[in-house]
Image (tube, rainbow, N blue to C red; front, side, top):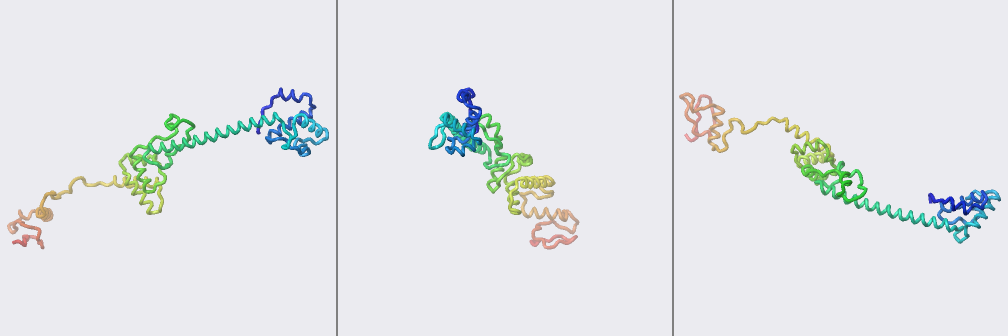
Length: 289
């Protein structure tokens, strides 16, 4: 026992007839009784040392106290009042311990249930750095207002799809609240882009660093944004529905001009598919005459 309740009136009434030394030794004796939570030792010499009874007067005073307030048993010097207080204290501590264990088990079960609930509302189901619960719910169910305030909101589906794709190929932790990550997904970055970046890193050094993956996706998208590409069909490109003959004729005209409208020494081009030589100022001759 670390403490006991001392009724001053009861103590004074029970010890008023004792000498000051006897009262002091009796007070020390019951404190030793409470501290050890068991009867005092029947070894009087040892008890004298424990209660600092060194002089003969103090030793005689201790014997007087033991004879009046304690009963010698096989377990030592027994005091009824002290024993009752110890039993009350032990019962109180036992019930407190059981209540504490029950409360701890309840919190543990509630935490497991809440964690499962939180992850089930998100597209990812792994322990992510910002997706952890920073505070344990103190009570109530997972749907209570207090618990809801202590858990992070669910991740929108688009971010969850990326996270699921990364987890599926081995990602252990990721930060779905990374502002660059969010911006990339909002800009249309697909799960496959992140997976490709992750696999590239794994092939290089065997690691899977989420920040590195985000940086790779960002860099690739930035490079693509800098490209200036021609929009639409290429200039002078023949229509898709042209025959091979028409395409080749159009190509020849683009390279050498309109030979059909040249000088008098030229003649129309009938078939350019079989030309073998082209010389300046000389008509192109077809193998078909």
